Amino acid sequence: MKRKFWQNIMATLSLLPAWAVLLVAYTGSMIWSIQISFTSSRALPSNNFVGFDQYRRLFSTSRWLVSLENLVIFGVLFVVICLVLGFLLAVALDQRIRFENGFRTIFLYPHAMSFIVTGLIWQWMMNPTLGIQKSVRDLGWESFSFDWIGSRDLAIYALVVAGVWQAAGLVMVLMLAGLRGVDAELWKATRVDGIPAWRVYISIVLPLIKPMIVTSVVLLGIGVVKSYDLVVALTGGGPGMASELPGKFVMDYLFERQNIALAQAASTIMLITVLAVLVPWLYMQYFRKSGRSPT
Amino acid sequence: MNVSVSAPNSATIAASAVQLARGRKPHKLTAGRIGLYAFLITAAIFFLLPAYVMLMTSLKPMDEIRDGAIFAFPRTLTFEAWWAAWSSACTGLNCNGISVGFWNSIKILVPSVFFSIAAGALNGYAMSFWRVKGANLLFAALLLGAFIPYQVFMYPLVIMSAQIGVYNSIAGIVIVHTIFGMPLMTLLFRNYYAGLPVELFKAARIDGAGFWRIFFWVMLPMSTPIIIVAVILQVTGIWNDFMLGLIFAGRENQPMTVQLNNIVNSVTGERVYNLNMAATILTAAVPLLCYFLSGRWFVRGIAAGAIKG
Image (spheres, chains in turn purple, brown):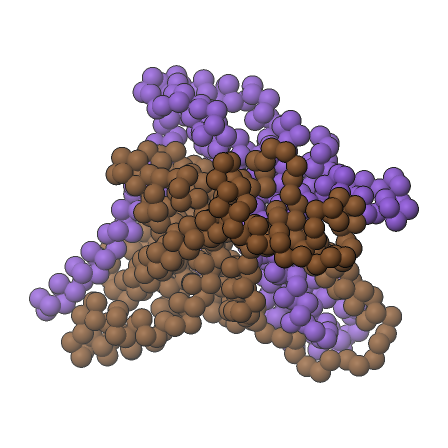
């Protein structure tokens, strides 16, 4: 049995790198960055603790307040539109249509591309002088405007359009997987009872695929909180600071504006936001389903 | 507290994600069917239009682009912009084209994909077949870490990588990709191994095989499907990364996405739209190729990854 003992030691050893990553790279970094948020660090970390001063400053920084407001607008619209569009596409694909594979490939391909690519494509499409706007106006619709990236009021919606284009396919795939998991007997039964299909989708199928919806919301929501690339590529946060988001705020203050304590205060707020969504979800997803009650 | 982390049925979800609709296709065209196809085709146009515009723009000379007909087919078809984008596009004062970024991305991609998958496979194997104390806690914590925005870890990781001397180097960015790839890879392999019959493992134990022997000779040879999924996820994920590459790779090793953004967004003077679009297509080419070639494996990857994210 000595051999068995050594083999178990080996298994334990093999997980040491993972423990190191968890403790140093994840936990250590996280604690460190929270710690910095309570100091007066600017370009370099310092150990001069100032309590909640950075948080007070953060919430009186207009750039941050704009970022938060944008996060809500962008987040809600992006998640809701992705969900609705993704669900409709999945339902449409589930109607025994022709070229299902072709359609699915078309709806999902943007998801294979980076947010940088997505942002640059839409920047070109929304180009005020040469983009879609110009082409449509030349067709005779003189008042058409699609120069959202140049507009203070609309730049944030430009992010929504580009984001939806990139991510709706992901929701479609998840929802479709959910729909295909619905028992065929259910459809037979509702047909016998003469219930219209749309009614079945809304009243029976939607509740059945709730796990897929929740997963989609969590995935999209986390994407929203950390979004950085899309903003950088599409609008650069502008015009002015009209399309700034918290994820970009943190990066800018860390690496360009040399104000790391403020940046870390902002990142701590991001962390709290994410955990508030994540912990209940992970709990539901992984711990409750095991059937074993925690003792 | 007994933390038992049950794997959600990723296999079934992934499998149903690639199924086609059951049953015969109806032949009658009713008003409802016409509406359905109208919706699908409208959606398809929305998704395809940007790619079409991008391709057309890249094939036009600049004077044609200045006419402002973004949807028009090129009157004179030219690949000049493609060639220029590849070999002479400028970022700042360097005009060696986006090929520089392409090769940097390859140099980052290959080791990052390898190490993250190797780490994930080993963790997944040790966690699902061996009784290691705290393995469930480790797994749950890694999973949680995978959801937290990179911005939270960024600055301390910069300092740490500078201290061990890998900041601004290929080695640095590879390490960072491995660290951030590990949770998802561990999840994939852990769930996959949980689905393999445990008798297989027991038989190998009885035959006297040890930890590494079982891993290399029994488990890895059976892991081809999940390795394919993992490679697809990591190749697209790492190729498309911008933030980590921007911060950790250093000026000399900027990956393609970072260079692309510099080419397009930090220009002075007239914007060369055809070159920009050609460079954009070139940057998107690798993950797109991966997508079109792998077909349903890509979908399977998303479904498996979606369980985490």
